[in-house]
Length: 415
Image 1 (cartoon, rainbow, N blue to C red):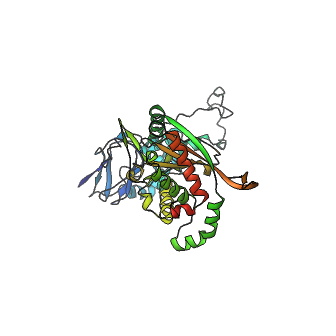
Image 2 (cartoon, rainbow, N blue to C red; image 1 turned 60 degrees about the vertical axis):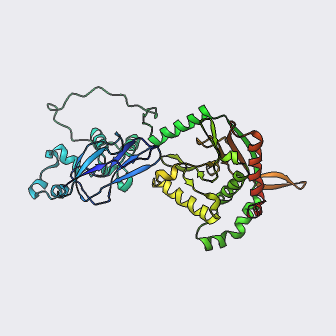
Image 3 (cartoon, one colour; image 1 turned 180 degrees about the vertical axis):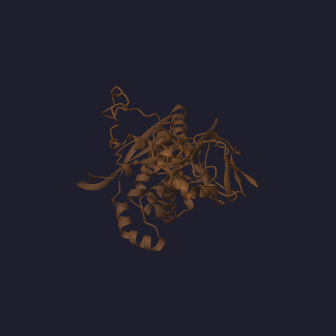
């Protein structure tokens, strides 16, 4: 029986996707629920799995093709047997044939590039490369185009000189060719769908919102003292480390309760006030910046927040986040401090009206009760849409977060 490999139904916000590397090729056997090919959308990378066990009979789209919901990508024959084992069990006489007499197809099969996509195998063939010589970084040991390009940029060892041919049979010496030196080559790489979507949304924010940023600084010593005092007991009780993000996220939610406009968004000529608190936490991944959403954070404990952030961070790194986890959100937090940023102006994540920027913690001299002391200080930045948030609200919102962080007991007492 033939079973179609189809693009799954994509959410309304995602109209199409780009095929990534095929993990199986025509003639390969596949198990039910085994990943066959990756589909890169504007938000996440989806795994398209086999609905039944069998053999890949045909592939309709190559890697890099743009596809939509219900497009047929290929066919699985559930009654066929894989052709790869038969090819591997060649007759002894054929195995003893000299390598120079083997056809090109056999040489390519012997190169071990079965986990490479058709486009990658073509690139290997064009540059006369062997898959065994290339370090693979794709899923399940697959070789990607980037792996091949990276290999080509590396200096290659000189080939061993061949025995000199007789003078009469020696071909004429070709004219010398100039080899580019100094690394001044250009590489043109298409934007990933995620990177293109990020660019589109950032430009959308700049073109539509009246963005303004206000700054403040916070003394984190009280918060850090609280963490140091309870971190061991917290981890033993909840099985997760007590980080800074639970403090900042909880402080942001408390401030959002006091200033509803910061948690609102614009829809046409209306202002939509959200009575729930879905906080987006910006996470850096190999594919770019993603913002998974924590739902109903006002109902979450510190342990729930820390566990959710840790889980989402790991799945963002592995490309395992679902589209629904990246959709929505009423407010966002981004932490450039983990990369060493001292101060920045974050850009809104439409249709949200504000975003909080955290930065690096630095020991700086400050005046406390008339004395100069050294404290761990952080600059905070709040970028907001001035169309619905007044400057007074934005400043007071940020001051509220500052006060809550400098006296963590306030969050427990809600004062």
